[in-house]
Amino acid sequence: MSRCRREQGSAVKFGPALMRQADQLAAFTEDAPRITRTYLSREHRQAADYLIALMTEAGMQAGIDALGNIVGRYAALDPAAPVVMTGSHQDSVRDAGRYDGLYGILSAIACVKDLHARGKRLPYTLEVVGFGDEEGVRFGVTLIGSKAMAGAFDPAWLDKSDANGVTMREAIRDFGGDPDAWPDVDRRGKLAAFVESHIEQGPVLLNEGLAVGVVTAIAGATRLKVTVTGLAGHAGTVPMGGRQDALTAASEMILSIEKYALDHSAEGGLVATVGMIEARPGAINVIPQDVGFSIDLRSGDDAARRRAVAALEGQLHQIAARRNVKVALNRFYDADAAPCDPTLQARFARAIAAQGIAVRHLPSGAGHDAMAFPALCPTAMLFVRCGNNGISHHPDEIMSAEDAEVSTRVLLDFFENYVPPPR
Ligand code: HGY
Ligand code: MN
Ligand code: MN
Image (cartoon, rainbow, N blue to C red):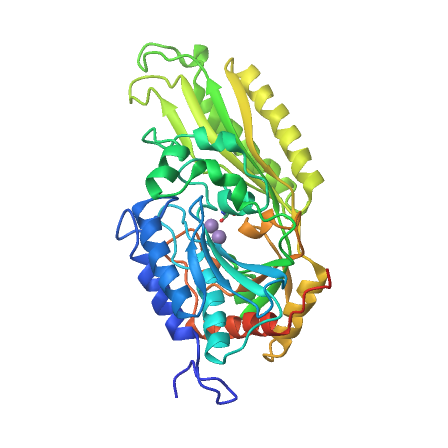
């Protein structure tokens, strides 16, 4: 009997098909054999066409909104019924795994397909969304689709350009969208709840032998761009004592950032990452004059994250002064920790227990589209176990058909038993 067969002998319904669908979507990539799919790209369109076909086959009306979000609707019998939204993002980081984001869209579609096959409608309209951009790879802005739906879209984003100088406005038009219609995407006041199913992207569920878990809160995040300005010089003639080397100064700054995060990791699970660095002029025989690097700071405790930003600002300026270079920090992204709704968490807990699985609540260090919604409506997340020690944002990201089966059953149980509060 296949390992995926259910203990109770009930047939496998979801797992293998979900794995096949994730494999198919992984083929829509800009740099095969790696997986990279950015906002409004040709590959975004391919993924949209594929997901719209799956949504339609599952009994939904499906299409793309003005900003490139893929939206499927499984209408309630009552046209005036409340709306619940679910989904995740279709885009990826560079050289990504194949489940981050996409799994949450596919699992929700599988739930609707099952409901439709049984001729069952819900006491609410269920919208399944593939958000166009959560990772922010192409334009440096994250959560574009989910923030637009939450009424937090900033029209200034439309003038941001990608690495080829194409503005978001032009890219939306080229994609067939309408950048000026961004206010139409706003769903404020129209959603009863938002839920997202997503791989954990960490090792907690794996280490505890659990297929699924309930998210308590999503960590807050601050992202900064640091520029260090020294003085270029001949690598052979400038004595070590007199240098204004921007790269060695940046190196000391980066190690001080790591040390701060290590010393304060108990504060809401504070983490700090320098993921990008660039040195100019970038010649082997020239002392670097300009260095730019990124800082990504996260914590479940907003006050701790703010303290970290202030402390690091002071530290970097002290190092710059001692090394006779200049430093500037540009904070371009700030998101407070997003709490998950206790009632929805309890609903997920009941659905997990119904599968005979111990209920584990855990925070999310990763950011998600769900972060945009607590301001609008009760919001919750279901985590699914990752293999390979929980690695993600990496081609070794992995999950199992068995866990896809279980987590989709949990999500379906949630949808079938959730009753929106009276309006
Ligand atoms: O960066 C994040 O946490 C998310 O994967 N975009
Ligand atoms: Mn991601
Ligand atoms: Mn994600």
